[in-house]
Amino acid sequence: MEFKNLTVEIEKPIAIVTVNRPKVLNALNLETVSELGAAFSMLEANADVRAIIMTGSGEKAFVAGADITEFRGKTAPEMIPFAKKGHDVARIMESMGKPIIAAVNGYALGGGCEMSMACDMRFAADTAKFGQPEILLGLIPGMGGTQRLARLVGPGIARELVYGGEQITAQRAYEIGLVNRVYPAAQLMEETKKFALKLAAKPSHALKMAKLAMNYGYDLSLDNALMVETQCFAQCWSHPDLEEGVSAF
Ligand code: CO8
Image (cartoon, rainbow, N blue to C red; front, side, top):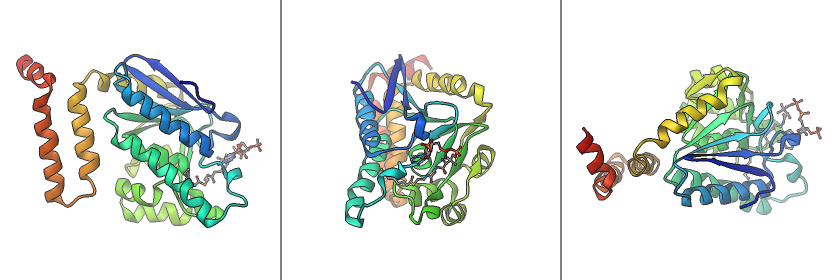
């Protein structure tokens, strides 16, 4: 599948999705958001791919947000499908069975920070910057930032970032739990690939069940979430990986 705004490299057993609009710091226009949805759906269906890295092209940005040039002249009703599109893509990423690691190589602002939060985890270059600067434009996050940020870092710090619009360093993002790991910029991709390969070597069905139990259970009451976990746990017995793993033990 060919994309205009992305590259998708398959280095079995991992794939690397790179937003490729470096002239605008990989800002997400609607076409790019649609292409991301198609790319992740395609990778979910590709049995050769067991873990995915998402990153941005160039050295400066992961994704500097939604493409602001698409905002002018729009009306409120026109922006509903725009936001919905972003939400749909984030949901594709969260509901697919394969882990996605964001390799945040630079600015992850607005929709870029939100995209990284739809990934399973975030590894960042020490030069990366995170933030939800929408307030400075007279708007608010529209791709899940008002919700996912609070779930990741807690409501107090999330409010500080969304209301204040300030950028934070990768180190600060690590301290608040937004980022899992920070690496010197030159090592980010190599280290992220190493970790993706480790995940790719894990029993894929069990990993899928872990991801689904954690993502679908998160918003439920504890009783309902435990029911989701029970189903996913039991599903592990429907796959030969379990027999293999238990026998090896
Ligand atoms: N949209 C469009 N173009 C952009 C964007 C953007 N978000 N960010 C940077 N660019 C362009 C610049 O206009 C510039 O273009 P040109 O060379 O033609 O002038 C080029 O990229 C390089 O940028 P700068 O010259 O500004 O580079 P600096 O190093 O001086 O600054 C910054 C880097 C700090 C990242 C700065 O570019 C900036 O502040 N960018 C905007 C960041 C921002 O506000 N992001 C939030 C956007 S709103 C949003 O994301 C809402 C999400 C809604 C989700 C909807 C789902 C589909």
